[in-house]
Image (cartoon, rainbow, N blue to C red):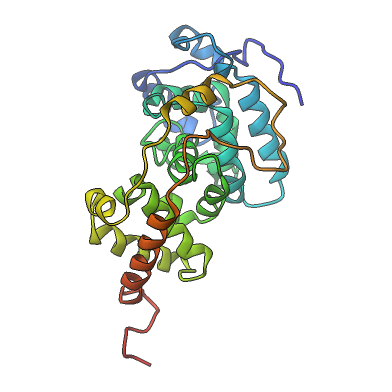
Length: 293
């Protein structure tokens, strides 16, 4: 699949300010009556900060086109688990860069507005997007940033396997993602281990387990019980700069993330056991309380 650069397909990823993006998202745009195009924003886009290959738009566009092709006959939500790790690996950013909403505004308004409509469209036309935040908004709501950050917070070093598990559960993406506990890597992995082992199953159970774990301690408490290890900043930097090198991404296999250090197994297991005990006594709607038959 080859993406041709044109006046409507920018060659490189830039940034679009929140002010410009906010003015562009009118009710008619949200309802699908007006299309968004790169040419309308061309003079308002800021260029990327460096000339490296990681800012090339073609790999991102090809990835999004493949996602739409693969999941054309499925509910668009199913694409999240497949897309999140591959978007993270394709769009190689530091956390500071990923905190810049201008990059996500550019992706949603200038590069791939049709993908936003495909993923979030509804109504009779299938193109109405209910929330402006899917185009330009909070990091855990915006169409692309939510997937990138989910991959960043739930990956286990270079292993994206946990990301597939996390993003295959909409309750994790919609609720757990923004909770403080997932900022601590062993805590994030512990929650996923409960899900993987079947200790929690339904959306209500996932939310209940995350709620009691989040309420039971802050990051400092988790660090005292189950310390994390510092990630290798140099390895991350090398991985970012290696964007575009090597063979093309194989869509049928998971890519590898940066070799910046795995989550300590013992720390994740300590928190898994603790979270499971907390969850056993947690109130879950529809589940009998302890002592009830």
